[in-house]
Amino acid sequence: MQRAARQLADRKRQEFPDADMRCCPTETKAAFQQTLMQAAEEDGAGPIRELHFIGHSGLYGPMFGTRRYPEQMSRHEWRQFAIPFAPDAQAFFHCCRSARWFAPFFSRTYGVVAHGCPSYTTFSRQPDRYAPIDAARDDAPIYVVAVPGYKAAGWRGAIRKRWFHAPTLPMTRFDPQPEAESGSYDSLADLYDAVFEDFRVRQDEWRWLTQQMDDRSEPPALLDIGCGNGALLTALAPLLRHGVGVDASARMIDLAQRRAMGESNLEMRRIDGPRLPLPDASVDVVVSMLSWRYLDWDPMAREIQRVLRPGGSLL
Image (cartoon, rainbow, N blue to C red):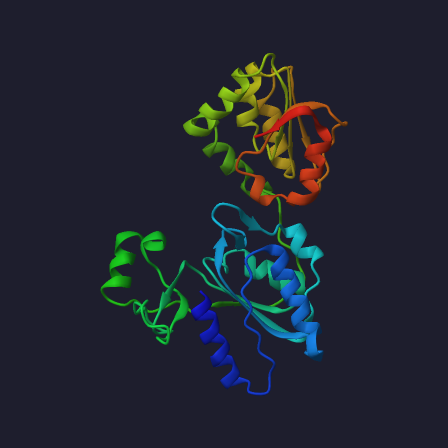
């Protein structure tokens, strides 16, 4: 990655000989933020015209840290971080699947043109067609490119990539859009309800969760964040003293309430934003199944800490 970054910086210096070009390795969220602020402030460099990020990416954006201690910025953190962009700035995220969700979100959040990779990335000697790199040569050309391979297209994709040097996929451009993305599952609720009729089909998660319940001395009070259609909470109902499910989708809550009819120890509530409609220290267990990645982690984590009793668990 550092080789790819240095070579990209060299190509940019040739393209913009009068520009102040910085090539900065960062491995943590804090270092990333500090680097961008310093780049604009030092030596009167001024606002950032182009930002290029080369690194790992998860489903919801750039990954920092290490495999042992990974870090990822939540939507809340990105919104709180003021990057000093020039009015005509552009941002490029050379990392896996950054065009799926993150690049358009970044473009809306910062009002700049953002580019992301539509598929998984790899290293190549050519920018327009996959060509394996020579790892032993520090001066060999190296590009970070998106190309369908095994993860994106199975064995056929792997063969096209390795044997036939498949063409790379261009980065997808996103212009700032004023409308925010819908964070609700309202339009998908009925389809979701049909698919997740019984949550116990997810056997590994179900086995692990019920073991946590069995290990307790008495049935707990449990909060399910992102309860969806209530399938998980209703399945857990016999193990609970009391259960509360919350979700941002009004239609999901309707379905969850219908599913929980007859379960006197359950209730479902709709929420709007990272605030939980529960008093302090009122639950023993908080569960978030398949929904944590949608949450604004920082304010929600504070809310979870508030509603959990001392010694409570977040599962």
